[in-house]
Image (cartoon, rainbow, N blue to C red):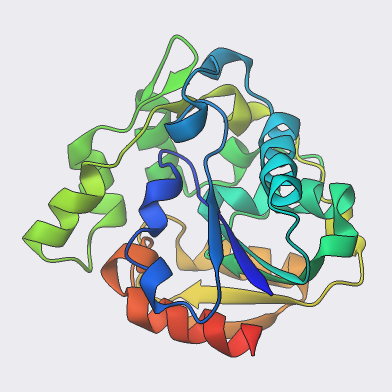
Length: 231
């Protein structure tokens, strides 16, 4: 039994570094195309299908089965595509403050207007690049100075096209148990939008008193939730 960890927008697999030592089973953190181990992929070409294929490739390469699939933030729109590709390998899905907009809509349309403005200002020539000041406000509100600096040092460029691609949630129709980790101090994916995602998913909900990057600001707390799901 394994954990497979999918990062959100603007980060790579190393956002999970603080969390992994607390987990009760082996963990595979996936780099989505355009960053980390897949930095050779041009961001302008990346689609949601490419992201799902990257997860599938890594899971199949390690021949992982009975997986607890963990998706953070923007990974909420990659996870259902993974479920359609390798459903037989997934035992449980955990979505951590995950973006789950209505089927067929765009992620950009489902972001809080205040946050959306910061996101749109961060797009240049098809690349989404978060400024440290804006990212600090959205992502680091529950961190001390050193922890915030460590998180911000891991910011990565992302594909702006992913924000505008219509999402396909078909995979969430599969009979695979799912849990939503509701982050009560999140200033990035704010309360109203987390609740919309929860309503769409009809998932079990677990509250965690952290900001958006719980795996960095409170890795022990998030790991306790994940270990409880894993059993």
